[in-house]
Length: 282
Image 1 (cartoon, rainbow, N blue to C red):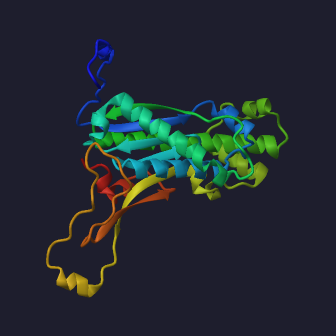
Image 2: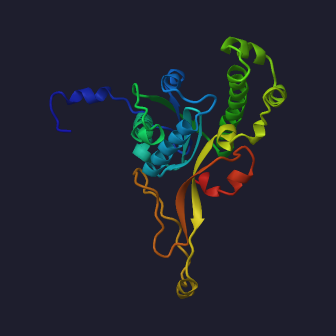
Image 3: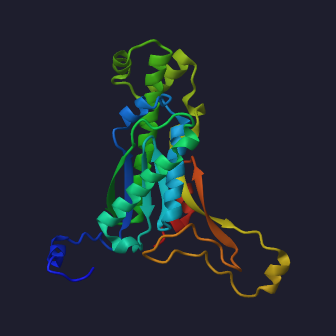
Protein backbone atom coordinates (compact mmCIF):
# COMPACT_ATOMS: atom_id res chain seq x y z
CA UNK A 1 0.00 0.00 0.00
CA UNK A 2 1.39 3.37 -1.02
CA UNK A 3 2.16 5.81 1.78
CA UNK A 4 -0.16 8.79 2.04
CA UNK A 5 -1.51 11.06 4.72
CA UNK A 6 -4.37 8.59 5.15
CA UNK A 7 -2.15 5.58 5.88
CA UNK A 8 -2.33 6.17 9.61
CA UNK A 9 -5.71 4.42 9.68
CA UNK A 10 -3.86 1.10 9.40
CA UNK A 11 -2.75 1.61 13.00
CA UNK A 12 -6.31 0.79 14.08
CA UNK A 13 -6.02 -2.75 12.68
CA UNK A 14 -5.17 -5.01 15.61
CA UNK A 15 -3.11 -8.19 15.23
CA UNK A 16 -5.06 -11.39 15.92
CA UNK A 17 -2.53 -14.25 15.79
CA UNK A 18 -3.54 -17.71 16.97
CA UNK A 19 -1.23 -19.39 19.48
CA UNK A 20 1.72 -21.28 18.00
CA UNK A 21 2.03 -25.00 18.61
CA UNK A 22 -1.73 -25.58 18.94
CA UNK A 23 -4.11 -27.57 16.81
CA UNK A 24 -6.78 -25.41 15.20
CA UNK A 25 -10.36 -26.59 14.76
CA UNK A 26 -12.65 -24.49 12.59
CA UNK A 27 -16.32 -25.39 13.07
CA UNK A 28 -18.85 -24.10 10.56
CA UNK A 29 -22.59 -24.10 11.26
CA UNK A 30 -25.50 -23.40 8.98
CA UNK A 31 -27.16 -20.13 9.94
CA UNK A 32 -30.90 -20.55 10.64
CA UNK A 33 -30.95 -23.88 8.81
CA UNK A 34 -34.22 -24.96 10.44
CA UNK A 35 -35.93 -22.35 8.31
CA UNK A 36 -33.69 -23.11 5.32
CA UNK A 37 -34.49 -26.85 5.43
CA UNK A 38 -38.22 -26.14 5.71
CA UNK A 39 -38.19 -23.61 2.86
CA UNK A 40 -36.39 -26.10 0.61
CA UNK A 41 -38.43 -29.11 1.74
CA UNK A 42 -35.65 -31.26 3.11
CA UNK A 43 -36.66 -34.84 3.89
CA UNK A 44 -37.08 -35.44 7.63
CA UNK A 45 -35.39 -36.70 9.75
CA UNK A 46 -32.45 -36.90 7.31
CA UNK A 47 -32.06 -35.63 3.76
CA UNK A 48 -29.28 -37.62 2.15
CA UNK A 49 -28.93 -35.11 -0.69
CA UNK A 50 -28.27 -32.30 1.79
CA UNK A 51 -25.71 -34.37 3.69
CA UNK A 52 -23.92 -35.33 0.48
CA UNK A 53 -23.84 -31.66 -0.54
CA UNK A 54 -22.20 -30.78 2.79
CA UNK A 55 -19.63 -33.54 2.21
CA UNK A 56 -18.90 -32.21 -1.29
CA UNK A 57 -18.31 -28.69 0.04
CA UNK A 58 -16.05 -30.10 2.77
CA UNK A 59 -13.99 -32.05 0.22
CA UNK A 60 -13.62 -28.92 -1.90
CA UNK A 61 -12.41 -26.95 1.10
CA UNK A 62 -9.84 -29.61 1.97
CA UNK A 63 -8.67 -29.69 -1.65
CA UNK A 64 -8.10 -25.94 -1.52
CA UNK A 65 -6.39 -25.91 1.89
CA UNK A 66 -3.88 -28.71 2.37
CA UNK A 67 -3.33 -27.93 6.05
CA UNK A 68 -6.80 -29.30 6.81
CA UNK A 69 -6.16 -32.98 7.53
CA UNK A 70 -9.54 -34.27 8.68
CA UNK A 71 -13.10 -33.02 9.01
CA UNK A 72 -16.26 -34.25 10.68
CA UNK A 73 -19.79 -33.31 9.69
CA UNK A 74 -23.33 -33.83 10.90
CA UNK A 75 -26.56 -32.18 9.85
CA UNK A 76 -25.67 -28.55 8.94
CA UNK A 77 -22.24 -28.36 10.60
CA UNK A 78 -18.67 -29.36 9.74
CA UNK A 79 -15.51 -29.23 11.86
CA UNK A 80 -12.10 -28.95 10.19
CA UNK A 81 -8.80 -29.82 11.87
CA UNK A 82 -5.73 -27.88 10.77
CA UNK A 83 -2.35 -29.38 11.55
CA UNK A 84 -0.52 -28.04 14.59
CA UNK A 85 2.34 -26.61 12.54
CA UNK A 86 0.20 -24.71 10.05
CA UNK A 87 1.33 -21.24 9.05
CA UNK A 88 -1.71 -20.65 6.87
CA UNK A 89 -2.18 -16.87 6.54
CA UNK A 90 0.47 -16.51 9.27
CA UNK A 91 -2.07 -18.01 11.70
CA UNK A 92 -4.19 -14.86 11.57
CA UNK A 93 -7.49 -15.72 13.20
CA UNK A 94 -9.82 -13.51 11.15
CA UNK A 95 -8.11 -14.33 7.86
CA UNK A 96 -8.35 -18.11 8.35
CA UNK A 97 -11.91 -18.02 9.66
CA UNK A 98 -13.33 -15.76 6.97
CA UNK A 99 -11.50 -17.54 4.13
CA UNK A 100 -12.67 -21.01 5.19
CA UNK A 101 -16.23 -19.93 5.94
CA UNK A 102 -16.70 -18.04 2.69
CA UNK A 103 -15.13 -20.75 0.53
CA UNK A 104 -17.25 -23.49 2.11
CA UNK A 105 -20.40 -21.40 1.62
CA UNK A 106 -19.50 -20.69 -2.01
CA UNK A 107 -18.97 -24.40 -2.67
CA UNK A 108 -22.31 -25.24 -1.05
CA UNK A 109 -24.13 -22.80 -3.33
CA UNK A 110 -22.06 -23.79 -6.39
CA UNK A 111 -22.91 -27.51 -6.09
CA UNK A 112 -26.53 -27.05 -5.00
CA UNK A 113 -27.99 -27.81 -8.50
CA UNK A 114 -26.15 -31.17 -8.59
CA UNK A 115 -27.96 -32.41 -5.48
CA UNK A 116 -31.25 -30.53 -5.78
CA UNK A 117 -31.94 -30.42 -9.53
CA UNK A 118 -35.04 -28.48 -10.43
CA UNK A 119 -35.20 -26.88 -6.97
CA UNK A 120 -33.67 -23.40 -7.15
CA UNK A 121 -32.43 -21.69 -4.03
CA UNK A 122 -35.16 -19.48 -2.63
CA UNK A 123 -32.65 -17.35 -0.74
CA UNK A 124 -28.89 -17.49 -0.06
CA UNK A 125 -27.76 -19.98 2.59
CA UNK A 126 -25.09 -18.81 5.01
CA UNK A 127 -22.71 -20.34 7.56
CA UNK A 128 -21.12 -18.91 10.66
CA UNK A 129 -17.82 -20.15 12.05
CA UNK A 130 -15.47 -20.21 14.99
CA UNK A 131 -11.88 -21.34 15.54
CA UNK A 132 -10.93 -23.13 18.76
CA UNK A 133 -7.33 -23.87 19.74
CA UNK A 134 -6.49 -27.22 21.33
CA UNK A 135 -3.16 -28.03 23.01
CA UNK A 136 -2.68 -31.73 22.35
CA UNK A 137 -3.79 -34.93 20.64
CA UNK A 138 -5.96 -36.01 23.58
CA UNK A 139 -8.08 -32.87 23.37
CA UNK A 140 -8.45 -33.26 19.61
CA UNK A 141 -9.64 -36.85 19.92
CA UNK A 142 -12.07 -35.85 22.65
CA UNK A 143 -13.38 -33.02 20.46
CA UNK A 144 -14.21 -35.33 17.57
CA UNK A 145 -15.61 -37.94 19.98
CA UNK A 146 -17.89 -35.21 21.36
CA UNK A 147 -19.17 -34.29 17.91
CA UNK A 148 -19.83 -37.93 16.98
CA UNK A 149 -21.61 -38.61 20.28
CA UNK A 150 -23.70 -35.50 19.59
CA UNK A 151 -24.53 -36.91 16.14
CA UNK A 152 -25.85 -40.14 17.67
CA UNK A 153 -27.89 -38.38 20.38
CA UNK A 154 -29.48 -35.90 17.97
CA UNK A 155 -30.17 -38.40 15.22
CA UNK A 156 -31.74 -40.97 17.54
CA UNK A 157 -34.05 -38.32 18.96
CA UNK A 158 -34.96 -36.97 15.53
CA UNK A 159 -35.56 -40.44 14.12
CA UNK A 160 -38.07 -41.29 16.86
CA UNK A 161 -39.59 -37.81 16.79
CA UNK A 162 -40.35 -37.89 13.08
CA UNK A 163 -41.59 -41.49 13.26
CA UNK A 164 -44.12 -40.35 15.87
CA UNK A 165 -45.19 -37.46 13.64
CA UNK A 166 -45.10 -39.07 10.19
CA UNK A 167 -46.22 -42.60 11.08
CA UNK A 168 -47.75 -42.23 14.52
CA UNK A 169 -50.00 -39.28 13.68
CA UNK A 170 -48.82 -37.12 16.56
CA UNK A 171 -48.38 -33.39 16.41
CA UNK A 172 -44.88 -32.02 16.93
CA UNK A 173 -45.85 -30.88 20.43
CA UNK A 174 -47.20 -34.33 21.27
CA UNK A 175 -44.06 -36.01 19.94
CA UNK A 176 -41.83 -33.81 22.07
CA UNK A 177 -43.98 -34.63 25.09
CA UNK A 178 -43.79 -38.36 24.36
CA UNK A 179 -40.00 -38.26 24.23
CA UNK A 180 -39.53 -36.02 27.26
CA UNK A 181 -37.40 -37.78 29.87
CA UNK A 182 -36.75 -40.91 27.78
CA UNK A 183 -33.31 -42.51 27.64
CA UNK A 184 -31.56 -44.10 24.69
CA UNK A 185 -32.80 -47.65 25.35
CA UNK A 186 -36.40 -46.45 25.53
CA UNK A 187 -36.09 -44.64 22.22
CA UNK A 188 -34.65 -47.78 20.58
CA UNK A 189 -37.51 -49.86 21.96
CA UNK A 190 -40.13 -47.33 20.88
CA UNK A 191 -38.77 -47.30 17.33
CA UNK A 192 -38.76 -51.09 17.06
CA UNK A 193 -41.98 -51.92 18.92
CA UNK A 194 -44.15 -49.21 17.38
CA UNK A 195 -42.61 -48.69 13.95
CA UNK A 196 -40.52 -51.85 13.30
CA UNK A 197 -37.42 -49.71 12.79
CA UNK A 198 -34.08 -51.14 13.89
CA UNK A 199 -32.04 -48.00 14.51
CA UNK A 200 -28.72 -49.85 14.12
CA UNK A 201 -29.67 -50.77 10.55
CA UNK A 202 -30.10 -47.16 9.44
CA UNK A 203 -27.44 -45.59 7.23
CA UNK A 204 -24.12 -45.02 8.99
CA UNK A 205 -24.11 -41.54 7.43
CA UNK A 206 -27.06 -40.67 9.66
CA UNK A 207 -25.89 -42.48 12.81
CA UNK A 208 -22.15 -41.76 12.75
CA UNK A 209 -21.82 -38.57 10.70
CA UNK A 210 -19.36 -37.93 7.88
CA UNK A 211 -15.58 -38.14 8.21
CA UNK A 212 -13.61 -36.47 5.41
CA UNK A 213 -10.00 -37.51 5.72
CA UNK A 214 -6.67 -37.34 3.93
CA UNK A 215 -5.73 -40.98 3.42
CA UNK A 216 -2.24 -42.23 2.59
CA UNK A 217 -2.71 -44.73 -0.22
CA UNK A 218 -0.02 -47.07 -1.44
CA UNK A 219 0.72 -46.86 -5.16
CA UNK A 220 1.20 -49.95 -7.23
CA UNK A 221 4.74 -49.83 -8.63
CA UNK A 222 5.96 -52.37 -11.23
CA UNK A 223 8.54 -54.74 -9.78
CA UNK A 224 11.17 -53.86 -12.38
CA UNK A 225 10.87 -50.21 -11.37
CA UNK A 226 11.21 -51.13 -7.69
CA UNK A 227 14.30 -53.25 -8.40
CA UNK A 228 15.93 -50.47 -10.40
CA UNK A 229 15.28 -47.88 -7.73
CA UNK A 230 17.73 -48.40 -4.87
CA UNK A 231 17.00 -45.12 -3.10
CA UNK A 232 14.46 -45.01 -0.27
CA UNK A 233 10.99 -43.85 -1.34
CA UNK A 234 10.32 -40.17 -0.83
CA UNK A 235 7.55 -39.07 1.55
CA UNK A 236 4.28 -37.77 0.12
CA UNK A 237 4.36 -34.22 -1.21
CA UNK A 238 3.53 -31.73 1.52
CA UNK A 239 2.00 -28.30 1.11
CA UNK A 240 4.35 -25.38 1.57
CA UNK A 241 3.47 -23.56 4.76
CA UNK A 242 1.20 -20.57 4.39
CA UNK A 243 -0.03 -21.54 0.94
CA UNK A 244 -2.98 -23.39 -0.49
CA UNK A 245 -3.29 -25.55 -3.56
CA UNK A 246 -5.02 -28.74 -4.69
CA UNK A 247 -4.36 -32.01 -2.88
CA UNK A 248 -0.75 -33.22 -2.86
CA UNK A 249 0.21 -35.37 -5.80
CA UNK A 250 2.66 -38.23 -5.56
CA UNK A 251 6.05 -37.34 -6.98
CA UNK A 252 8.02 -39.55 -9.31
CA UNK A 253 9.41 -42.45 -7.31
CA UNK A 254 6.83 -42.17 -4.51
CA UNK A 255 5.08 -45.30 -3.31
CA UNK A 256 2.25 -43.43 -1.62
CA UNK A 257 -0.03 -40.48 -2.24
CA UNK A 258 -2.70 -38.53 -0.41
CA UNK A 259 -6.34 -38.73 -1.40
CA UNK A 260 -9.40 -37.17 0.19
CA UNK A 261 -12.05 -39.72 1.12
CA UNK A 262 -15.43 -39.65 2.82
CA UNK A 263 -16.00 -42.28 5.50
CA UNK A 264 -18.87 -43.05 7.86
CA UNK A 265 -17.01 -44.73 10.67
CA UNK A 266 -16.30 -44.59 14.39
CA UNK A 267 -13.87 -41.88 15.52
CA UNK A 268 -14.35 -42.37 19.25
CA UNK A 269 -12.28 -45.56 19.57
CA UNK A 270 -8.57 -46.05 18.90
CA UNK A 271 -8.72 -47.78 15.51
CA UNK A 272 -9.37 -44.70 13.37
CA UNK A 273 -6.56 -42.62 14.91
CA UNK A 274 -3.96 -45.36 15.36
CA UNK A 275 -4.40 -46.35 11.72
CA UNK A 276 -3.76 -42.74 10.62
CA UNK A 277 -0.90 -41.31 12.72
CA UNK A 278 -0.27 -38.62 10.11
CA UNK A 279 -3.48 -36.82 11.14
CA UNK A 280 -2.11 -35.76 14.53
CA UNK A 281 1.52 -35.39 13.47
CA UNK A 282 2.98 -31.89 13.65
